[in-house]
Amino acid sequence: MSVVTSSLSGDQEKKLLSLFGHVRLSLLYKASVQGYTAAAFHARCNSQGPTLVAAYNKAGFLFGAYTSKDYTQNGQPINDDKAFLYSINDERKNPLRVSSANGQYGFTDENTGPNFGALVFLFNDTATVQYNAGNSYNFEAAHMHGDDLQLTECEVYRVEELGGCLTKTWRNMQWTSERKRQLKVKITNYKPDVKSVSQARVLLVGPVGAGKSSFFNSVNSIFRGNMTSQAICGSAGTSLTTQFRTFTIKSGKSGEPIPLILCDTMGLEEASGAGLDMEDIVNIYKGHVQDRYQFNPMTPLSEDVPGYRKHVSLKDQIHCVVYVVDACRVSLMSAKIVEKFAAIRKKTNQIGIPQLVLMTKVDEACPLVSEDLQNVSRLTHFIQELSASLGIPVSGILPVKNYSQELELNQNTDILILSALDQMLNYADSFFENQPEEEKEEL
Image (cartoon, rainbow, N blue to C red; front, side, top):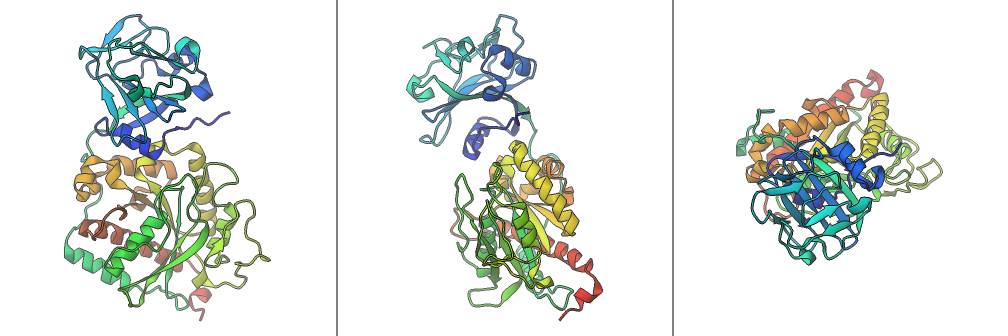
């Protein structure tokens, strides 16, 4: 059975969401899987409330239509003053949005594909769009679809209102300079309750582009007191991190390392045989993988390969696992990625390592958080949905904003990141407490 997943890129999704208030998009129909026919469309999209058509072409345009009304196939023109056509491409910073010429017409509710007058999708049960210039909506064809009416994909999403971000306080936080100072002191003075270990080792695991490397750079910037970029980060279709890296963080430019090591890995990828391999994850957990080991997704690390540490102790092992997820992708995580997370969680539970979730890019997921990061304490819906998807308790979800474009540190950003580090160390303590007494006394 085919797994139906969204074709939206992260940037496309953000631009689409900017057309609405606080909503999420739930995929109802995907033509490449369920067929480029009106019947397949209506079978999945009728009586679904507000919906969005997303049409893709080779010219690089994502274009389509929104209506707040139901599809019912009643054969009548439907008035909908909230309806609009839209277009997104890489060359435009903001989406093109076009309302109907009279401000009232929405679409014609026939037994065809979605019919918005000027644009009729799935025309004659094919992967094409019929363009009827000036019919109810006025726009330049080149601006709407680049004069390319042949589709590479067509999807329909239900547009679900989430209400405002500020629905219910999820976690109270202090946002003062004193709180930031307290957290830095607590983290800097942390000592594992095990004689043989001086630094807790935390492994970051997550999809490509979730923000693992950016999180380390942000942590490093806070303790250095200025912006740094030690770990490679950016945007790409495949993982930019291809090595296993262990990053120490110094308190100040020439200060002592803090008692925490952040470990970075290849990103998880949907395709089988791509991204981080389960056997490599287990080897990392057990301390067998040396810093700068070059991953090979087709061949897991073995004892006879350079980079394999044969003799390990508690200090080499992973003491806390942190799953890193982009808040903007919470509702659109593919089934393949969720399955990979589930497999990793199962193995991690068997080994007995505590787990947390780092939810990144919270400012991009909600306009109110973008305006004021302190509103993150009320992002209940994102927290609950992510908790349900990954099977991690709500108390184990840590929202953060990584530094990306900033030139100066920000107190609220620092407090969120430091609070997340503090919780990671608390969970590492739980790992140490569960170790046999003889290992705790190991010298």
